[in-house]
Length: 140
Image (cartoon, rainbow, N blue to C red; front, side):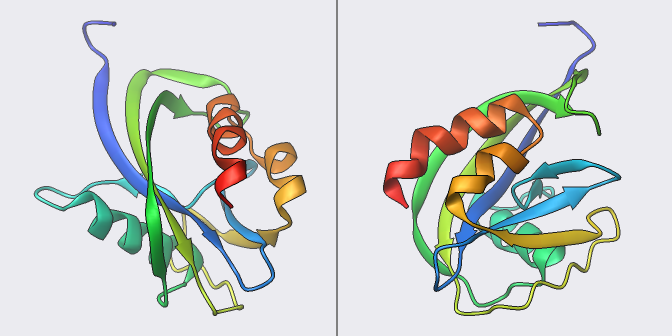
């Protein structure tokens, strides 16, 4: 590991609606990923996941279905490259919602959309996010 590399923890989720679509969010001009973000000081990972999902999608009615574990990757750039200045440990949870309207609150994530499961991997920008989704597809 690089000596000046920042190690951070993030939390988020794979959220699906009543017809099985998955919520994805756009960060910046072209980076698509799962709703997730950094833990605040002293914040529990599940609380951070719920907060980040609300900020990035507007969804508040979330039924927790399970813990999907965690994976590590470098911070992504808008083009999907690795920013090796930051290594992230990302805790992910599985949620279901009955809400249908996506309305991001966080201006860094200006767009959210429902995506059919078979299109999720194609839309995700970061290769590690794609790999993670493929590894949990059978759970959905």
